[in-house]
Length: 365
Ligand SMILES: NC(=O)c1ccc[n+]([C@@H]2O[C@H](COP(=O)([O-])OP(=O)(O)OC[C@H]3O[C@@H](n4cnc5c(N)ncnc54)[C@H](O)[C@@H]3O)[C@@H](O)[C@H]2O)c1
Image (cartoon, rainbow, N blue to C red; front, top):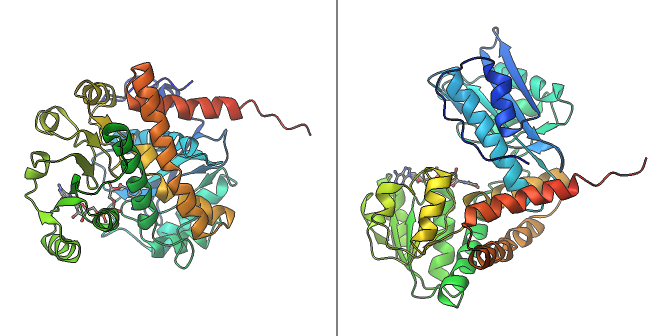
């Protein structure tokens, strides 16, 4: 249904925008400009078969508009898959605001953006993403109710995300080692920020052997002292003797160079877009006998938390829903083994199948 093709061209070429939309099968793009406030944004609604398109707003100083366009197309499609495989009644969307988040923020800019979100009539629900704070969202909320992640509501999604990652990691351990206990397992966590620290907390409780790295020295020391984790260098995280690699900082860390070094048998972490090239490295991990737990599924705790806010559900509901990541992970891994197909492909297929199936539901009027 959504054939997975990477948009790799770097020039716009002929008929650029709609052609790009059709490559990923997007429903709608809204280009937003307001000279008075300086707002330049793109809202992408990828698919609303399962419900309103939910996905955060990113504020980033893109080098050019094409970069922003490609980012919003790729990220919004990713949200469709994440929401679908997580069993949520949400479609996929995302927004990007083009600009420097340290210099160009203002109440007026975010309220103007909120008006654009409102103009979509509930088809798109926004939230925080890179470069956006809860305060910014309160300004957006002055112009639209289609916003989640507000202060005093569902709160920081990181604990729920970390719990989901932990459950997915345990499922992979069950498949790879015959037991889901992580006691004594060597786990290398790259990035101990919001999600990474909570993950280390779960691992420490289970007496895993934890190795951590981070570019932020103070954070690293704090987490090492608090949980008794061993600190390793930024590049040593790929070569340390480990069972499980947990990328919780950056994307694209599973690539040709790192795969030549990683001696793990599981990759399970919170970062988005862990595979540098989904097709190439998704197959390469399988050939190396590594279980890769698909990122958009294992890190869905954050969006599950947002969904709870949209539907007025409790934080307990969100944690229980995130716990289902264990079963979904095991299901994907088992299907991957029995069908001899890479896990990323199985996960994509499962997400697509749910959309196709629910798309058939036509309520009689
Ligand atoms: N927060 C969530 O609920 C959530 C949900 C889904 C996905 N994610 C993804 O998980 C990852 C972590 O999210 P977060 O909220 O914890 O972010 P964060 O910014 O709080 O933490 C990231 C940490 O990684 C460190 N870091 C950055 N570059 C690094 C490098 N080269 N090597 C080692 N460490 C490095 C940072 O210093 C920081 O401590 C991100 O990729 C994010 O997109 C987060």
